[in-house]
Image (cartoon, one colour):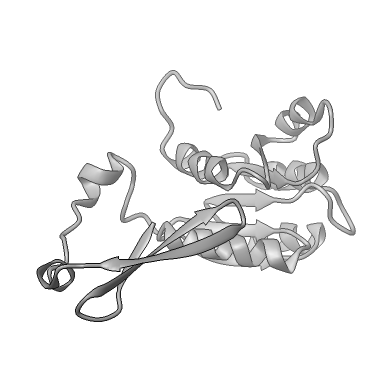
Length: 177
């Protein structure tokens, strides 16, 4: 929920329910909107690497998906170091930019995400690769893991993607992805 002060007595709260949004207007006492609360990021977010400027490479043929992933990355204080529309250009950017995390699509025009992951893993197996796809194919997870992909996340579950990226750079002892 985002809260914005539009004047001395009005506040607007935006709620997002799936893909539809609506706004609620209500009266706010004058002292409430003038005082901005301080945020203790460590208490709110826990021991994650908050100040980390995580460098992410996005490899997806959809402009809309890349735009959404850029927005998500900005909201988490991550840096999108590069974007690629095809598998071949993704491998080249991986070699050139040396990202810390890669978000891959499964279906791309020239190579699929599994083939791209194999090439990227051969170049640097320590970089976490996350397959972010709309396709639900039976048996994709074992093939993805064999190619070096850390986890497979459906595009319908953006919150799981955020957790997967955070878990990839902040591994918990004794927990498998």
